[in-house]
Structures are given as C-alpha cells and as structure tokens.
Length: 91
Image (cartoon, rainbow, N blue to C red; front, side, top):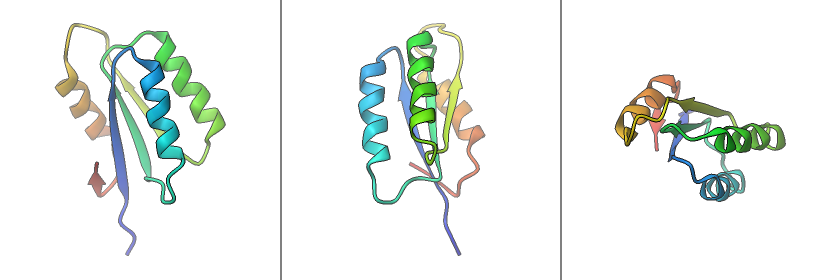
C-alpha cells in the first residue's frame, strides 16, 4: 500500500523565501504527492512565482491556496489548505 504525503508551506509576501523553500522541495529524492502553499493574502509577486515554479517543475503537484489579506490569519489559510489536500499525511 502506498501512503501519500502532502507538504504544507505557509507564506505571506516573501517570495524570495518561498522560492528557496520550493527549490529545496524540488531537490528532494522522494517528492511529496502534494505541495500546498497556504498563502495568507500575498500580492501578485507570490502568485507569479508559484506559476513560474509550476511550469519549471511539472513533477511537483503544487496547489496554491490564497485568501485576501485581512491581517494575520495564518491559521485560517492553513485550515483551507488542509481541506484541499487528498493525502494520507500532512507535513
């Protein structure tokens, strides 16, 4: 039986850090089945980075979960990302 794993990454308006994190994920020997990006209202720079990364790394199943910026609501966006996952385990 194959166990599926999702990696959840929280982000907010720091595309440089997100890019380094995604590069690290892409360099892993065993990739997660899903990479859920829980975006707490970042601007278009983050969305553009994610789209470019998806095009450059089609083997990563990246799911961008975003909501509008209404102040710090990290726990809400993490919960929304969890609901989007189809994996057995969340990291």
